Image 1 (spheres, rainbow, N blue to C red):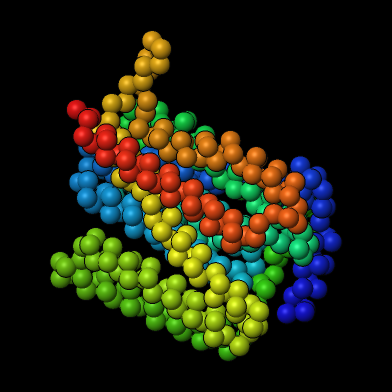
Image 2: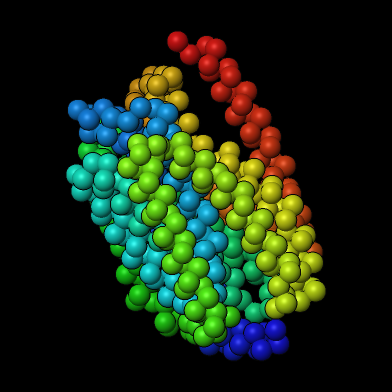
Length: 403
């Protein structure tokens, strides 16, 4: 543990600690990389449910609503589930920097497949690349942000607020741009723009990461030993064989359905966190202090699961509800315009972009008097609960009085 602390101090000393609004220059690099990555992800996500649901003559795949929503739900779940695996790979094999780079490349490949007229085959191939790529990139770029700062630096929380603002700036702008492609049915053009956005982020990362991130994340924090490489290699091979066998058998017998896949993902979604926390708590490499922190984090983890379960409905249920059951005509003091269904995806990030600088300044001003991270988490969940109740009331009201 002492050795890891020393290494972190050396990493921090190797990078400029000022240069991006009072934060390390590396935060600026990661800010723009994450902006373009989230631009590509949220832009694609705003289009995806419509691409699956729209009739073939309208540029879509012609799936029924239930199937399209199931695919969307499984896709979202797998992106978050693979983040656990992506974090483990970075920690034990590649390091966070390489994992971020590889993840970005895979995401671009996925978006390119979506931009090609390959129908359902192209859809599932693209999802595979984006899921794996996001699993590698999403947790590890955030990890790099945390390692930019010295131990107990009061700027850390404000730095994460700024970084999170880049996520929402990408999520705000991309639906505004790509909404046009829903109306025209040119979904492949929209997916191509998403691919270009991710490519811009990756180019920015390649050009500026070495100078501004120093040695942070260049090596695995806890690399596998020779015996562990052999053990995990065998386990990985067995897992691939089992998955392939199940898919082949169910495919040949005609029993393969998306309901089976959805159920399997649900079971994994419950089992993996339990296994993960059990391993963390029982590991001999974890100190008593770290173990107590992991246990204290579990309630926050459960709270986060509940929040994101609701949040992820925005690109699924809300998108289709807006399209099918809402009056999409705006009339503001005589000014009339169409409000595209994908634009609803920009409302949530709009408020975060507006409020994130305010929150960041508050934490910076309070310095060491600011509330603890768990307290901030609970406060955020409390306010989110009020918003959820408001959304439920608004949804119920609209169901009664729309049409």
